[in-house]
Amino acid sequence: MSLKVLVADDEPNIVVSLEFMMKREGYEVLVARDGRQALEAIRRERPQLVLLDAMMPGMSGFDVCEAVRADEAVRDTQILMLTAKGRDTDVARGVGVGADAYMTKPFSTRDLMQKVRDMLA
Image (cartoon, rainbow, N blue to C red):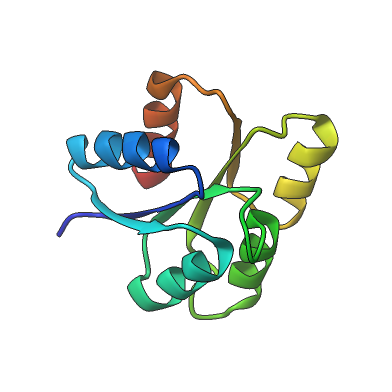
C-alpha cells in the first residue's frame, strides 16, 4: 500500500512541482487548493503526511493544523508546514498549533524530500 501525501497549497506552480516530486518517490498524492479543502481531505482520505501552506484562502494552514490536532480521528496525521513566512514568530506559531515540522519557501527540493522521507519512515 502506498503512503498518501496531501499537498495543500494555493500556488499552482508549487502544487505541480510538489505533486511531481511526491509521485516520483512513489507516494499517492492528493491535492487541496485551500484550507477548507485540506481539512476535508485529511478527514476523508487520512493521508500519512500533509504538506501544508501556512497562507491559504478560506482557512489558513495554521487553522487547519489546529483543527487536525483537535480532531481525535486524525490528530496523528503528520504535518509539514511550508511557508514564505520564515520569521521566528511564524515558526513558533506553526509549532504552537502542532506542526511536526516547518520549512520556509523557497526550499531546497532535496532537503524537502529528505524531510518527507524521515517523517514517513
